Image (cartoon, rainbow, N blue to C red):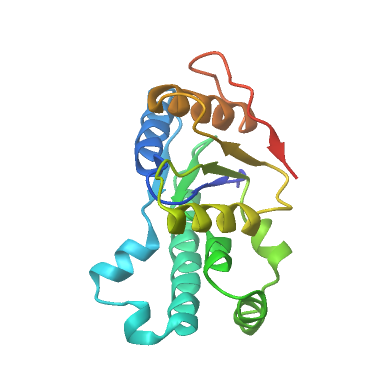
Length: 196
């Protein structure tokens, strides 16, 4: 079975994550590469009435982590049945996003209970594209910063900043995405740096 890459689109609010997911999915379709899109797990839980207020912060993020991993595993299983030479999974958020909302020790305990380490979780993903939040809210910017830190150490962790307009930002993100996955590029790539 060919390797099925999982790409995480991370970042704080109003960074263009949903827009990029649609763009990336459309591009893959146009070049004949099938893909599955995983929408934001927190939004799915919220729609089902699950919230931090109901469960408590730590219990909520444990549920969020487990549900995220379950959804990814279902997509991997489904994509493996396709028999396609190439395919991809695009996810709005990933397992380490929860680390941005918890104290380090609390997150460590949660993942240890489920047999994971940070390194093991990082290795689930082939690429992490962090689309920087465009909001001016101090709270949102703090979350955006914490989400960047949560993914540090991933080999392919790219920050797509707001130095350009949204349309150019999306093109830069798409070019980084295609370059890392060794796919045809729709336009000249940008100059975003890899984050260690």
